[in-house]
Image (cartoon, rainbow, N blue to C red; front, side, top):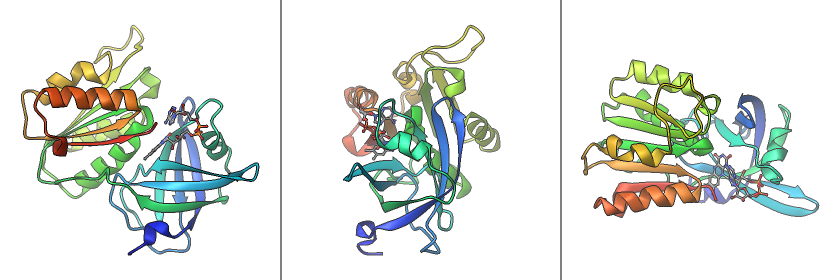
Length: 237
Ligand SMILES: Cc1cc2nc3c(=O)[nH]c(=O)nc-3n(C[C@H](O)[C@H](O)[C@H](O)COP(=O)(O)OP(=O)(O)OC[C@H]3O[C@@H](n4cnc5c(N)ncnc54)[C@H](O)[C@@H]3O)c2cc1C
């Protein structure tokens, strides 16, 4: 395993499908290995040549370990380089990959946790939650997931099903631009942090998304006396 992250592998697209406007779910495999060993929540690093220049981007693995395949969840960045390229990839096409890498992983499986995500920041958290729940964890888990519109609640049916199956898992989507028909939580994830914490101080908080949200949630937690070891985060920008 030593040095595995430095070795370039070839990932092959198995399938990709739209799960919300401008958001796709991808399944890749790595045909050269029997098993891709990683901890749920880690990311892979993809490299491709654009006009003769090597461009590398990180993508969080959205699935728990499963043989030699892994899943990603991406939004297409307008005028972006890499995300539009991945969106037009066809099944069977290949891409250079390194990893899995990174430390956005479960710090202590014996501690209750809140997961805070916005947009595709849900990717590594989906992997972690599916992994922990399938292992039979009985810890208390709460997912606070912020998006603009109802159709942007990625994997909503899956999380709703998990919440039905596991009484220790609560799913709180919140919309910043809801339609009149939306009868649940509204506003940014920060609006609901206090209620999610409900006075608990001995828990871990996992945060993933764009820098502005991640930094704001971290600052709020620090104000409440949370130690930095209790806050695990990944920033996409
Ligand atoms: C550890 C890590 C994990 C990541 N995991 C994911 C993931 O699972 N899914 C994913 O979609 N992206 C993820 N990203 C972001 C990804 O690496 C790219 O930055 C993103 O795809 C944009 O690349 P691009 O070449 O298309 O755009 P670029 O030409 O690089 O344009 C960059 C612009 O896109 C913004 N940007 C970066 N990420 C996003 C995003 N997700 N949504 C909107 N704007 C963004 C940047 O702030 C910047 O303004 C991750 C980043 C890191 C560091």
